[in-house]
Amino acid sequence: MQFSFTTELVEWRGPSPYYFLVAPAELVPEVTAAARVVSYGWGVVPVNCRIGDTSFTTSLIPREGTFYVPIKNVVRLGEGLTLGEPVALSMSV
Image (cartoon, rainbow, N blue to C red; front, side):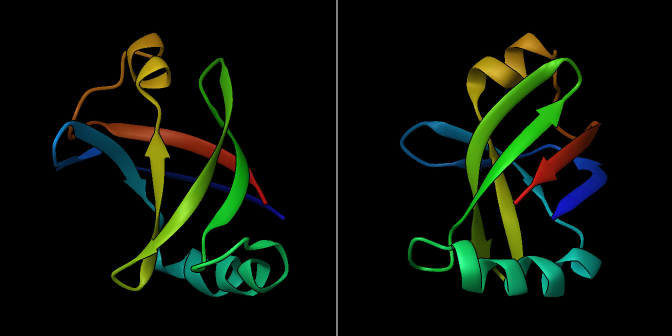
C-alpha cells in the first residue's frame, strides 16, 4: 500500500525532543487495515518513507485515533525540516 500526504512537523517533548508527522484522518481506515497484516505488536506499523531526497524506514505509532510518523533527526536536519512547516511524505506499508 502506498500513501502520500502533506502535514506540518510537530514536536513531542520528553526526556529528549521527538518529531512527528500526524497522518490525516482519511488515511486511518486503510492504515488500520494494513496494520492487521503487518503489525508486530501494539498496532505499530513498519513503513518505508521518503521525504525530499531522503528515504528511511520507521514505524507508524497509533495515537489519539490516528498514526504518528516518527521523523529521525538525521532526516529532519538533512532535509531542513522546521517545526510547523508543511512536509510532504510518501510511504509504503
